[in-house]
Image (cartoon, rainbow, N blue to C red; front, top):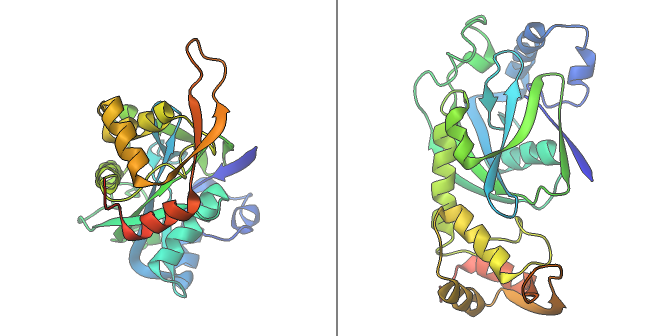
Length: 271
């Protein structure tokens, strides 16, 4: 099992927290602010909505920070020597240790005073308190082989069900960002394949349908769904069945990766 350490990553340097273990949390944040002015492009940030699927419901990866006990999306800043896509890829790598993650830019967020309330008890020259225009990316990951562990800056790091988000204190406009990401993901279903990053290597058609229903937030007609998904040409039927159920064992499928990535690039023409 892959163990993931989640945290604020105020400074994307593996030795950063180690060098400051003797400091309290406030001092770490203030110290990281001084270093950030030297490393990052001012006023541009990246927020990532990392979706997972537990076989029944869609989840989002969130962090709960110690200094205000509120929940954050994983995010970070744009280094002076990288573009936005590279920054988003780096941030996801640091958060999940996974390569080749599906990553999609979906919106820009530029509300006034996005950061001031969160860092209201810090000096006005704090890097994190400045106004940031954030570029949103969403990612799709299979989290069944990932164990999340919070770091020194985080109280917890958890997969949260979508329907539980309304009950959580989520900072800034991150709740709005999650809703926008989900809307973009739902639109993607109509013209791009979904599932390779969220399902196990082998799956049944009912399991694939559950994924689509979890994303869309509604039930789908089984016969119509099976017909449409087979017509796309992204599935390979295996000579295996899912054992252990009370009914007839359903056939197992896997994705035809060559067709999957071709259609992911060109779009679905017969959905």
